[in-house]
Length: 563
Ligand code: GLU
Image (cartoon, rainbow, N blue to C red; front, side, top):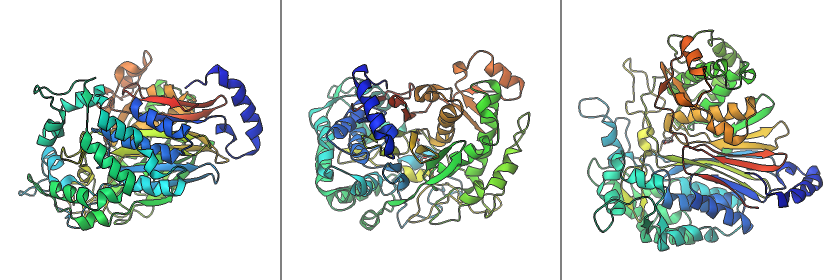
């Protein structure tokens, strides 16, 4: 986002006077929000202008997203958040991932014939809903890094829900679209107008139940969702047919978000940080580790650059499918996957032509694991907030599939995050899946909200995306675009998506410069259309002129400056 010229003098003056402080490069700005919906970004910017911190603004953004982008995230979902504290220059990973109820069993997504349940049936079942963690996670972070009172962060969400908001195009399209969850009785009731037709873009939508829930969350914090009347409604809804789940009030009440130092590794002259397992962070880190052993930086957007990207991606996906699960339950060899010796050997597998097959490697400390059968469907959001002090939130937030399980309580949808577990606990040879279901366990995620620092641990950029398993490729692409190809955030985000896993190269074939697709095909990398379009990358970077943010042109988001 360009800085208005009237601020340039101020920016320069502040940059000069602030040189001695750790956050000198970001001091000139009053902050910025990049998010998937303008109403949500605006809510965040208002909080920043009122003196709120990055986490304060994130709470406001999430509260509005849950209303205006309910197909993607909300009060009934979970999230991973990477947080940069400008003063200490430390990076913390917050884990608000949903947990399986204590009563969940390894075979709960297996059908009577010993085969995995159909995916749609599982999504719409009561078994898919884990304890929602997004609000509890934000409350934990806000308690540590908030500047304003929690109760003051919800006014936009409450007003929009009470008074109504114009249905965003994507929400309206999803409401009449392909997700099974858009056809449940709850979704139909919510999205049908009095004349019997489905809402259209621009129609005014009111959600008084959401406004009432938001008032309770503002007054009571996450307890409003995890205990009492709303918790009871969640449990009752999950226990309804078809295929009821086992969720209890105890499961909700005992939910705890986590916070730990982020997973940070050097990349070129930078440091990249993401959450650890069970997020997608370790996989993105492995992708970067492989590319660090190539000269992709010398191949900005050319066929060789995309070739290297695609082959590193295949190796990254193969390892990730095998080894990532919840480290509270299974041994996840993150250090082994990122071990320099392992990465050296694995990067050597990138030859002049693509390997016919790509299998998981054997990183140090790796247990025997089954290849995973988990699949994911788009329905998630990523946003970034930078505040005036230079603190940064990079958060990917989700109800999993579009509108989650399609079951609604008190104005919001319940997640279907537990379908991110492996449906089958074992492979044909009987090896255990790292991502098998277990009571209290958190399902594997692809979400990998990233923050990039320079070698002195000053903030450089933050980016992330929704997109199910494709998140890994989307984030890796944006990071290569920014850090190797030195593109501005907007151009890095707009680069063609290429999701290379196994024998598939799903991509946006019409977005490459002339000749690249043909040159790749001549080398044995045949890009196919489809599978690459679903990114929703949002990011903010520091430039000598101040902050620059960008929203994915494939969605309807914005980057707004708080100046
Ligand atoms: N449920 C997925 C995950 O946690 C995200 C789904 C999506 O991006 O649409 O990785």
